[in-house]
Image (tube, rainbow, N blue to C red; front, side):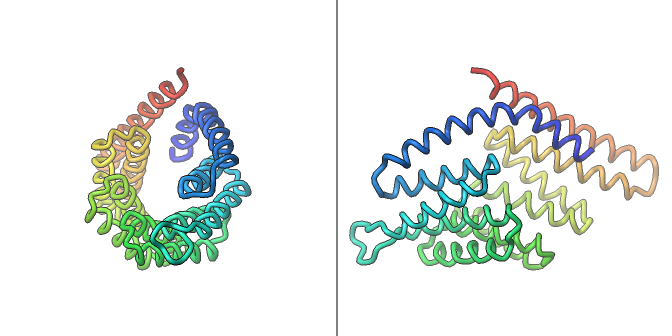
Length: 261
């Protein structure tokens, strides 16, 4: 069921997303090539890196993330004695950490995210701090250090709740829920995943809502496998099917909307 849901969902979204991403890449390439070296160019280079990352072009993604970092390090901001735009440097490091993680270079990813966190704490960039803890939590989880993963994701959630950053809260709820799922604590996993679904509905983020329903469906599937009776198992599987169908329906809607115009 899990693989079917994943690939079926991508079937609808991949062509439309690819066309949109190539248009954005071309636009950003043109801007970065001609723009003066300032904070806007730093952000554009980092955005270009993220677009390449989204289409799995790791080489180009890392190149423009490094370019963004180098530009940020050279910038002389008004009223600053030393060169360097700290927020731009930290954002670039965070992006480089994600790229390295996707390449399987977990040690380097951890180093970049740790560097980004230190800078963000120094400049009190609360959204950035929350993002860094989220990324470190994912790294710890991948390395099998579940205790540290929980610690980082809870710190991320606390920061996002403190500033009321809904999108960040949704990501934290999801990652905490999936950590509980990995521990086979499906009741606790569902509690957090339903919270992430609520955030998605508040933001009217269709893609995120679809992902939430898929994650929720998987928890019900797992509960069905562990059920002590056929009646209980059937109930869990029915809930799983309902959630997966909701995920697919929204995925269909997103694909159709993105495929028009």
